[in-house]
Length: 413
Image (tube, rainbow, N blue to C red; front, top):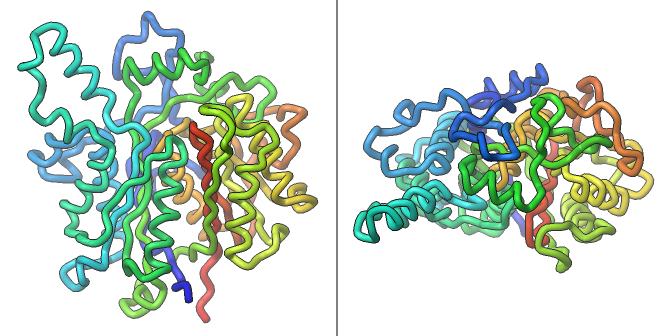
């Protein structure tokens, strides 16, 4: 039998707050973390804005020497993991460390290391490359550094599926506990690539909004949307086997009820036009949870603010939910924090958990008039307060990767 899995700890580093309390306060007030790029000179760039993490000081979250051996994507991951660990009240000294694992992914890793070291090669020769270039750059180092910092010695992996990475990591951690590979898992996603090559690359792909108005740049499902806003940060959670959590008296935020993962097998950047891949991921999550579509009250959509994603995800929701699609409330956290790429699913999972806990669904900030072909209830104009028993989080990644997590309000037996 599958074991039941619950959420016992939350951690976040985001463009609107560097911990869960500040992030959630920003969500509740509809705060937008998008502003002019400060990390490099954008004079020659068409895109001028992004959703940067602000006032993050790595040495406040970890040893200074350890921080120097991490790039920002790893620093954000460690900070969020430490917050989730403390929130869960776990003491690894009292646990079997080989029953505690980490699955935290990054879609890209460190483009900054590639940039700076390539410049050194060109200007000074290959012998001047940073000896730590490779371990600083590679995406698995977020999970590796968390494991080292917290002493978790069980399964330690990372899933790299572009913008679906965070949700796939949480889904795989859910499976690891369900089938007995671990009792505790740290899971989520992290990203930091607001840098010249990151912005130039996505701009060349015509994926980014060229708006200079932070309030009208990331506007998922809006008729005037013109691309996503690049964001950064980390969302990391503690998942735990139910009986293990109960035995140690842990606070239980929610239960993970279902997980679906599929592929479009269609195109390297565009979701399949009929939404069938994402729809099947949603259907799988609902089926595993043993619920009917009409029981799901809320969907935190991938909702990137690109033409194709928002339209095809809308079609996917209609395909998966049928008539129930008219009653489910849909929103996009990216309207406030931009698109965190590999970290998006982690932060949006935290949003879903808090939404279930407090009965609060944030509005899709900045979106004023939905595209006529985007015909769902996108929580435009104001947040919605109502009890939530089931919340769904969707993530879609370049390459045709689809991931859906369904959580439910935890009720003691």
